[in-house]
Length: 480
Image 1 (cartoon, one colour):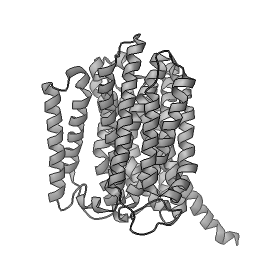
Image 2: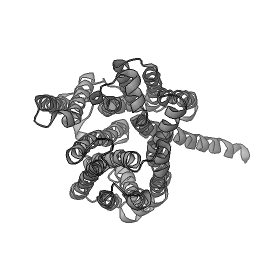
Image 3: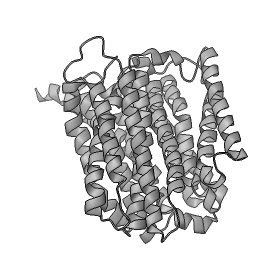
């Protein structure tokens, strides 16, 4: 009997090991957006960044990541998810090495862009592999998606911790070098744990990939430059107009292509568009909150990088418990629409509460309770909207669906952060020492993010249509 049970048990253990690698991918992708925050002053001093250009250490990664996700999803469908997953880790490793060894501004930004390109290959292929491993069992799929989702806040908090520790005790290049041993381990384990999948015939729409990436980059550039240039400046208007024109051109190219990067007809899948809008606005509300709360803890309350990371642990634990243990059960009981809308409302309430921070405040009174509410909202909304966006597409377009939902969240994150940074600078001050003015800016940023979350709840509630057929109690994905 043991001889017949052993192969099944081995295959099952490989699937869960594969989930560990997939969760590690999500962890690393998010960690690479947060780990550099503490190291930025050191990078600026050593490499000679001008203050107005320093944000591109962050933005080069996010723009390349968000702009190339659709290409990553398409490549995953055409060439096989396991192959693209491995190539993505290789590219991420190369970019990390370049960024860590950089001796000038241009090389640093190029290294960060290569890192973002690697993450754009990893993220959609990882979600495709997750569905390949667990899609046949709705209960297991729900657990796998919950663990995958929980890896994101863990990566964000770990980035703050590691960034502070590595910068203080080693040097700033180690915030990039830390990726190398992890990438090596994943590359060694991937062939034996991940299903090979099937490749499809088709050509790669490189023109579409170039158009959407440049379009997103121009729009983000326009918004990021507003604090220095203003909304009415020629550079802002030109960059914004070029970005919008390129994105319109991308849609036109997709509509007329026989092998598009993003088949527009996929949005006819039930609730795929609504779920992606929810993810876009969720990212646009959540990432500014995470960014400003770090600044408030360090620049106003005077916590160090390590203490700031520790202060965010209760929020991270709340999200992880909510995603793994609470959200799946509530979604099974009330449905993905109710949970997504309700989660966005709770997130908005928490952000309004956070906006009441005070320059003479404290962590226990001004930060802890409000961040726990925002964490609960994030946990409730993220899993049902993600699983609906992935489950709505046909299996042969799993990579494309994963690329679209990742793009939605990352583009929302980049634009939300850029816009709320403008709001914070308009209503406050970035002068170190002027704690009251800095706090006013952070408060305005939280209120703006709250408006995004509540608008997301309204738009999602209107756009999300009831499922035509009943969904199994334990099955989160809807509309497939």
